[in-house]
Length: 386
Figure 1 (cartoon, one colour):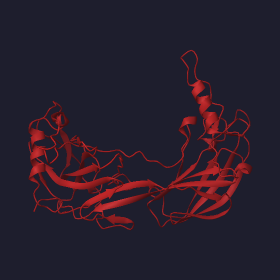
Figure 2 (figure 1 turned 90 degrees about the horizontal axis):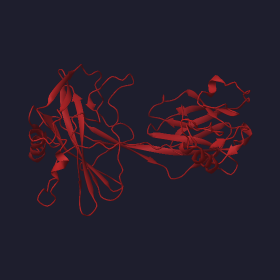
Figure 3 (figure 1 turned 45 degrees about the horizontal axis):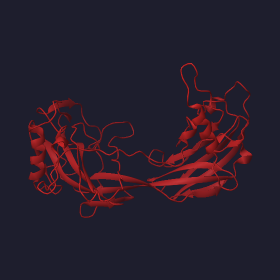
Figure 4 (figure 1 turned 180 degrees about the vertical axis):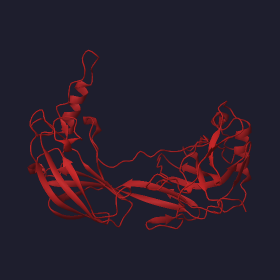
């Protein structure tokens, strides 16, 4: 749970939207005669023999079992909103070659040949490096992403570090090897190949791959701002207090109003208690609203609500400034919002204050925009060929 400030009027946060990054890596598509891949796509694939960077040891061993709320991948393919994900293979790199196999351990000679060719015939002078760990098993997983339409839904790889930042065995979700490739067909479909590094104990024979998507609910939850309990995606919360913060005297700033770069003309403090967290894949953003359910965005120096259009107009009119004429201080202050993500919070029994930069009498309702994570699990990914 954390407060999200508003650095400027154009940066109003309307919902939890995560910027998912799309990893890419280079191999060639299967049907090369029908759909030849431009050679320049392999320009960053490989160059001189791979340099091994030796590091320390792995800490904690990770649980491989299917966790509550996770979905098992059927037939080795994830299909979500016109996007298809599948494992092309698992690979082990040598100094000048790659050996790859399918998730079930059978050889994948085609993928081995593509990557080996990229290593031996690079189109770049950059040295290729990747990290290894003493007495540990290093593997690279090749994830194929096919976009069947204009939708570009990408996911995230859950972290393989514990709460103390120590590396656990598993797929890291990134790669320093730099392989990247993409391909577009005449029908508009696109293919990307992603390389994912993994480090494992020597005795580990297989390890699942987890891939998660976050989707936002199209409907807002409107609730009365009052003492009592409310539920979001099965998780239960309680509003324990609603306090009107006294107006701050000119020139003074309360230490608790750290989030506001300007003098806060008013503030309402709401204490929210997490009663029961049964859905670990839920997150939401909470905004205060007026009687009609319109969310507050900004207030002026007298704590009167200001519309987003008014704030944006001032912003656009005053962004033109030079060194001799610095930008004036914005006369509007953000009301703010409150965010909760079960992924980063204790399971239950905690209180968190929410600070809203507007007087209590104007806070009639709360609007909740929720998001949910879906974790797909590729089970039984073999780390060695049969």
